[in-house]
Length: 71
Image (cartoon, rainbow, N blue to C red; front, top):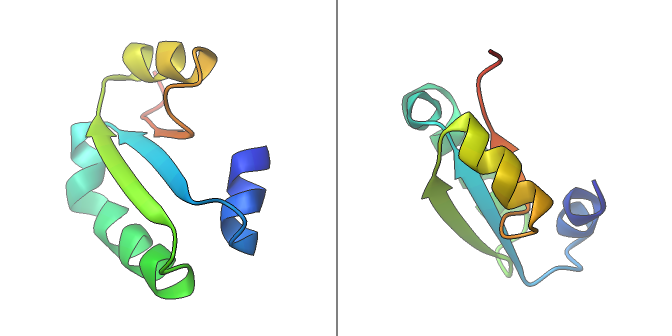
């Protein structure tokens, strides 16, 4: 939540987002395009992970945001 707020305010230099594969086709391109328009100075890194991997990566602070499907 803190990283999301800092990103929205432009106070963060980079954000790492993980996603499940289906998100690439559904809405992720629109979200990333809008984020880059609003915060062009922020580097956005994307990585594909399954839901379990995202959970572990969030706990270990290796990613800032995970986009997953509900079980």
